[in-house]
View 1 (cartoon, helix red, strand yellow):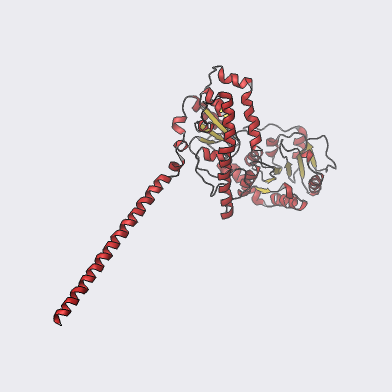
View 2 (tube, one colour):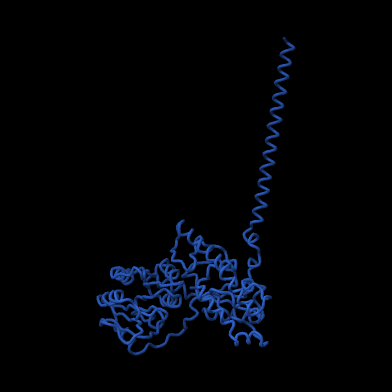
Length: 424
């Protein structure tokens, strides 16, 4: 899927307007560009010949970690696109490491060959290697925060801006939603699987599970549903085609957020201090949900193994086990406690680069080093050589000493034998 998506995206470089923009001589101070599944747009950045900032809307892709020579911390940091929980045992550390190496190898060959061919088709054969161009980024904005995903040893030009989309001020809720929530003193379940997943397309058996469980719980449910009606809607459930999610999550009566683990909704839940039930479907949702479960703020459900019993157990855990609410409040406090807001942080670094600073001062020198230099293969080879040489010298010295000792012993024996003969 990622391969097909990058091919469609790269085709946009052939659009006449894009080509004109890169050739009309217009001057820019800075380019912001997404870092995801292709580097073909680096050819466009190269033509503009200005500093650029990469943006990742999630944890860095495994091949990004490889390309930018970030420290290999697969021993304790689950890779994106994996559902691995922490702490990892030997099996999961092995799978996590393979995920990093195999996906990076595929990207640097199959993906890169096509990206490079498209770039050369549009801008000529003299265009540099697009991966090499990307290594010259000034700043890398990542839409994560260490409080949720864990501490990663990033160089200084990687800036975490998780929660950048969240507005500082909340808006008043629509009157009907506010009334529904205000009257729900027993607590509210907020159920929203985002804009990409259409709940109205859910299979009938799973829809029946949701309706049956929601009808039976002593709480209100507010549910994003894309159609005008829902069959057999329980009295304690409100459905809406669109919902102001962050404003709802901050209502004091909302006690649980049921989502898919997408990073935007997940960070809104974290910032609001609401415990969660997460049912991931694709992409980074699995690793995001795993991170939230590791922090003790979420229960994970699997869509393919979605049963009435498992949904009831998840609801019972989140609503009745006070640890989930307590962990959510602690995580929210740490997530929000920063020297500046995510947006202010991103603006400052953007202007820092636009003012002519950046690349010479924040770029890691590891990006330009050969792999054998980066991992000290040559140094270790020399140290090994000297160690072997030292062992060999010791061996020769000891062997020589033994030989001398044996010769001395033999000489002594011969001398004693000669003395004995003389006496005879």
